Image (tube, rainbow, N blue to C red; front, side):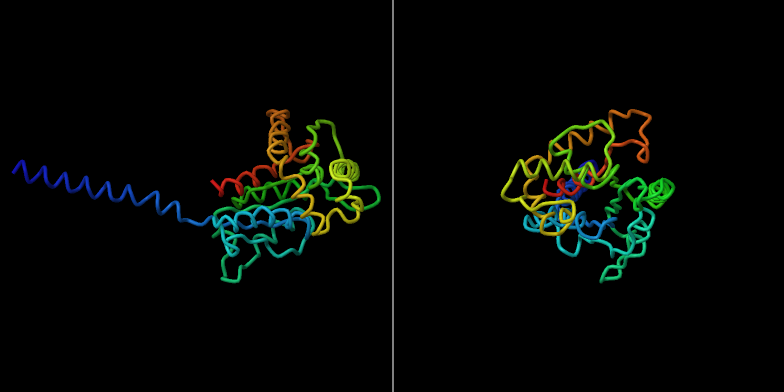
Length: 244
């Protein structure tokens, strides 16, 4: 009897070992899926597609498992609506994606028009949290992410100055490549691709600078009020982690 009981336990142990052996293989083969809704129609989506292009080449993600939601709104709360209302070609909705993100700018209202009011920005962040959607925000604009590849900056800066400084630094880094770069064309697809390629070697620096900025605000951090600040690095780190 003792031998039979021992044999039974031994066989159970072998079955458990088999299951344990299989689990890592199943996890390894799981393809991550991501849906992102962006405030702008060209530059931010193009930037993320450049990251994903490398993931597709590395065969860790597929074209179908990465989705940019249909672009219909240019205000933060509208971007969240775009995410929630998106239907993939297979009928998959945003809730079914493992990673759900909106990418929005604070873009403070300007006297001559443009920008967003703070209520819209805050409501987008709060509503996203309730819907279990992550937020990659930039205060003040998307190009702050570019600037952080060059500098760690703690003083407030608005969209026009950010563009001016980014263009200046890119022209210094590669005068030939960015000879005709200006505030009107920097958001175009071809220039966004060139900026991505040019700054890729400094991406880790930008991530460190973005993290350092968030830490500098401590417990008083307020996305709407704290300029400069961003959480875009969190989304980029997640995408980069797929390679590992």
